[in-house]
Length: 400
Image 1 (cartoon, rainbow, N blue to C red):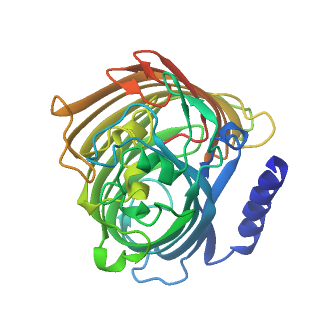
Image 2 (cartoon, one colour; image 1 turned 60 degrees about the vertical axis):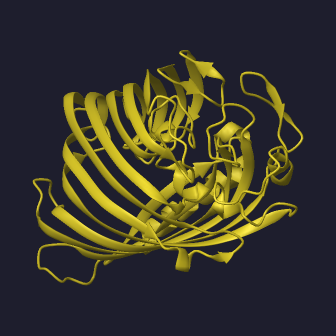
């Protein structure tokens, strides 16, 4: 299975690169992995597509229509009491998802960046759709550790322990009690603007890039099948980078060694009557502070700063394939109510710190396969049952 997925991914990349010539270009979207499939070393979800830029509305600036699609299988591990939304720190809800997602996006550039072939500002609007089938975890009945041992239950069995239905705490799982699966059809609209003065050469980065966007998923378009969604999300993300040192080969084609400092600030506000589990993951505080867990510390407001010092090693055979060591320090703050509840953090906010190192091999700067060691401070890693200690995990990509 590992070989087939790897070969398929490489074939899709190569074919897309060859076909999308002229006014078309290949666009890589996203990857995700299932931790129970070869401990997460193989992608189980892939999204990619194409961009057409043959239409020019403003001379000298890019106009593009993008079409992306994704399909795969992934796991969700959620840490909320279904009766009131209060965080739980043991025996989480674990289930699997068959995901099909699609995106149609229009972008228009304005002005010139100092980086060649880049627009200074790009505004965009997009339609995002998804169809999901939620099923019981593939490890139902097996024992897992979380500061102690517990048995993975079917979704209906886990909910029955709380004598409840998902109701509004799990709005995209409203059809699952007593059933073997349920389905969700989702729709969202996105608008945003990106300011881009960043030169990213894979082994080195210099400049600044910032993005402000808003997403809206209305209930009227998210009540199909067995799940519901009604939420909005506003995100500001900014990244600054500076290459401190770089040594190249004599012909200047390959990187031999480089040191780059990168800093990211991310601010998000997400709220609504029914924030689905799939929308909570990417904006949760635990997802954005390394060493913690997705779907933990998931309050309405989050603010995070991630600081990296990246050491990129030699490209011995191919440009874009090289080892990397990344030292990081993260700090995150979250406040407001936990999603789909009236519950707030015990002291009014969550404050997380972590530091650590990532050892990876970078493949063309969109996959960084390796291992991460994080020392978590000021909070707990729920999945590992670790407070103020070292957490190890597989890493598939750098987050920024």
